[in-house]
Length: 413
Image 1 (cartoon, rainbow, N blue to C red):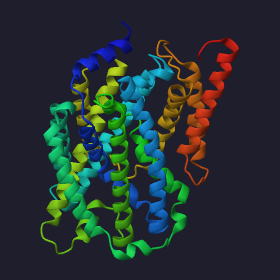
Image 2: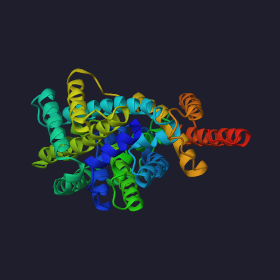
Image 3: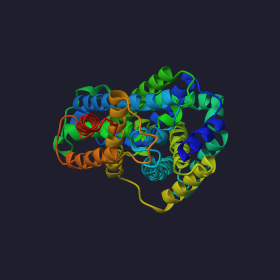
Image 4: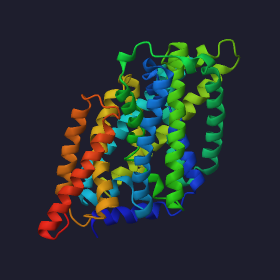
């Protein structure tokens, strides 16, 4: 029995209970309600409301269509995100992407706990370290409960988040925001704003199949996941952008306190949003790190690994500065956008699977070209950002090269 088969068997045994479409939607609602999303939205404020909103809609539209296609692969094949990478890159080749995915998820875990602790401390000043420890501890509780057993707890958490976020939204938005025009448009271009909006859905590409593979109804659950995430993430971006326009601040605590001056108990409401949203989003990062670790070695206990990732992230949040995440988002994009492009080309267009091979060398070559192209496109101001052009070119390249090889040799590449 090869390693990939062993991994799949082990994961199936661990997760016999299938998740409903509703529970998948709840999971991705929690992923969307995120401090990181709000903070990224503040970067778009110089464009003004109309251009900024258009960039958000365009970026999330592109990102979530691709997110659906990535998630549906895992839902149909019942494979985790990193197992689906084996379709294109081989049953040993996917280990590279699993390792890179674990690294980026450790990074995300630290960033989310860092942002959550800073925001919470701005609302109740007891120190960043206690807040980081509390948030990290709650994430571990979520992990111990497990994905298929969160059920009622996740429902209650999402209802609370929904109500609390409406309160913050009502206080943040003002009637004058819709007519606000750009004051410093050269601070960020429209294409760069689209790319930032694509970058958030893109950051979930290497994770979504970890959840859709467990769904009772693959298509419905994947659609619910991508649509729910897209709508909620757009909402969060809008809160951040509007707050920066109306209130002149990009800090979560500042947004909450300035938006609700004189309103008793608002700090407590904001604190609940900050802590709960950080826990529900970061839980997914840590959980998927454990699933990705299984693709590296079937002997790694995924839950224990996820808890270790949370501990490492908490330590990083305490000792390391993590204020600007734009370069981190672009790095994720440059690695995983061409990876997903190659996989989409193989699965949906060529309908080929090289999972029986150790390495899919042609796929690696196409990915490497896509990686370099993405890095170059970051320096080119296109109206659609870097992700969509990079993925389109990488997919065309993959299809063309593999068809030529198959035509000349009679074998799939």
